[in-house]
Amino acid sequence: FQLNQDKTNFATLRNIQGLYAPLKLQMEFRAVKQVQRLPFLHSSNIGLDILRGNNECISFEDILNDPSQSEVMGEPHTMMEYKLGLL
Image 1: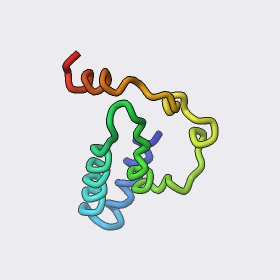
Image 2: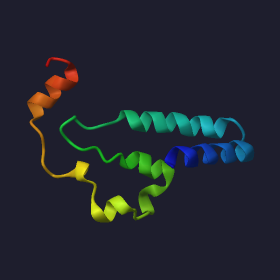
Image 3: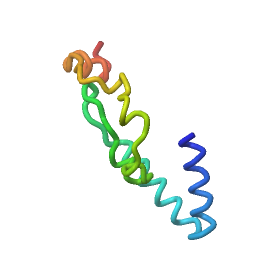
């Protein structure tokens, strides 16, 4: 759903403001997606929500909490070794 909504928003933005506006926004999306926490900590990607305008919306995940966002932290050393390819 989000991918189709982004495509529609980019097409509308291109028709209104020209080619530069959606290209700039896509570059900002890519830059924000690259910023993450360490692998054993959950990353909320609040920057991506702000760029999309979802920071003021209350969604299903905000109320019933996604199980992947549990407060149980994994073993940091093992997870870093796995990410670095040492395991």
